[in-house]
Length: 83
Image (tube, helix red, strand yellow):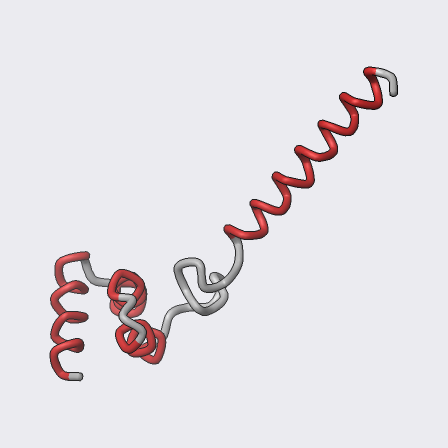
C-alpha cells in the first residue's frame, strides 16, 4: 500500500469514529428521556423524580416554571418528600 492510501484510510477511520461518538452524545436519554426540541412538562418532572434523576427534574422544573436554580431545587425536593 502506498502512503496516500494509508493516510486516506486513517482519515476515513477517524471520521467514522468521530461520527459514531457524536451520535452517542445526541441520543435521547443522555440527560433527558425526551426529544430536545419539545418543551418540558410536569409529567417529565415527575418521571425524573420517580427515576431518581434529581438534576434532570430540576432542569425540567426550571424550564416549565421559569424559576431560578434555588427555587427549582427546593420545589423538586418538596415533590420528592411528598412521594
